Image 1 (cartoon, rainbow, N blue to C red):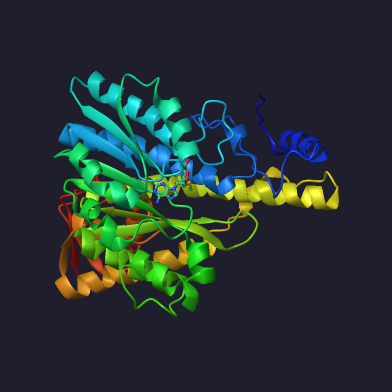
Image 2 (image 1 turned 90 degrees about the horizontal axis):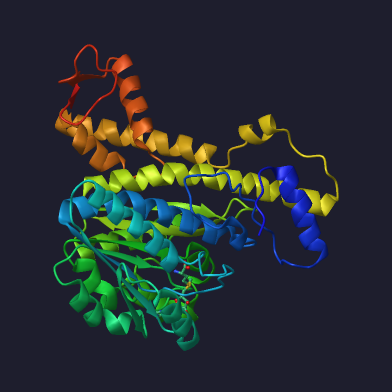
Length: 407
Ligand SMILES: C[S@@+](CC[C@H](N)C(=O)[O-])C[C@H]1O[C@@H](n2cnc3c(N)ncnc32)[C@H](O)[C@@H]1O
């Protein structure tokens, strides 16, 4: 095992790996000094997107798990497509189920340290018999959390899952390998479970490549819960699917975050998130903000490494150059403009809007973090278009309980 701290060091190590043909299509250069994550970075060589997915899951579970546990006193985490899948960790540290176990333990500890009791359980479903055997073996030593591994297809075991959940809060993660195995009609009972929320890995690249092909129409229709999406572009298809999830599960909010290929400005997948609570939305965007930073770093380092390997040169970008390159920059600007328009429409319609309602509406937009909403409000106020009701002279930020009023 080794850990690495700089791009130069990484490049040297990876060049050695390359010579020994240890890896196939690109690699991931992750600084182990990132103290906020438990992920075993060297286990993700060549699997940048999986690393980012796990980074997101880890931080989301930590934040949302704590809030749910404190509020409801119970939480059942359901991983419908558990794996292990392409795991390189010695003890499956790089799998979603192990990450969940580790984080949920911390959540429980935190809640118990605050003097509260919480009932946290996990369900892991896996259809492949060999993978299921590994899963069962890997979780057999877990005695401090109630863990239920279920063999079989997710869609077929939903009654058993719901039985185990009972009246508890369910947090379901659907992470398929393609677009089958989670037909909307079949997963509807889990989406409808209250209290509960869902994260779905929407395989954008597959939808982009195959979503309009007649030979796959039936399987995509099943996933999407009907027709009506053919011919739509990437954003259109995601909006369509999100709306279907919202309707079927009667969710208050459905939003998403994008994970790109490290070497191209192209989507790999989106994590689609459905919740009934503003708090969930707030936490999702906070985690996205962290994850985007991480994604930028990985994109830069992967690009630099590939350049180095292809050119065989060791002249790297300076840290200043690296820091200045942000692949999400134009998307951030676009999303901010959309959020400004959305706020103005809301104010034109209602004249007086609570800050909570502003958050409910604007935080649904990907990449619109609360810091950006604060900036938009500040700008609108400075331009004399709104005033803030309830804000004292000493308060710099708008807070819950304040109202935005159109002037
Ligand atoms: C993308 S991998 C999941 C990886 C895992 N969630 C992680 O991040 O570490 C998908 C897994 O689901 C399993 N699988 C595929 N179709 C399934 C189905 N219909 N029901 C349950 N598991 C399925 C595959 O065998 C594979 O292990």
